[in-house]
Length: 114
Image 1 (cartoon, rainbow, N blue to C red):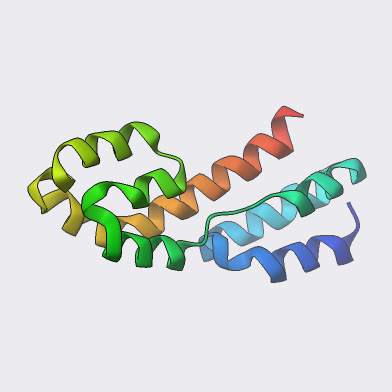
Image 2: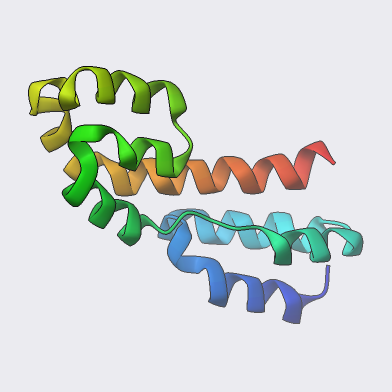
């Protein structure tokens, strides 16, 4: 893939990934086919900051887990009222990392499975 396209992707989507992953993502994108560019532009990554805000406001109902795509954990959190509040508080510290992990999984799926 073209270097300018890769750098543009990193600049616009860098906040959705861990900093240490950006170099590896750049290398993988440079090796990727040119036809994946359109697919990459259409991807909707989960915003870690928004997931934290959702967790603070509706974490006891599991809305934060539904937002990042963890449906099973969202249902479990909903049924237990956020693990009686304990799980909700723990997720305040972990949800941003979980959102970034989901984003890297989505990117890897696109780059290596198509």
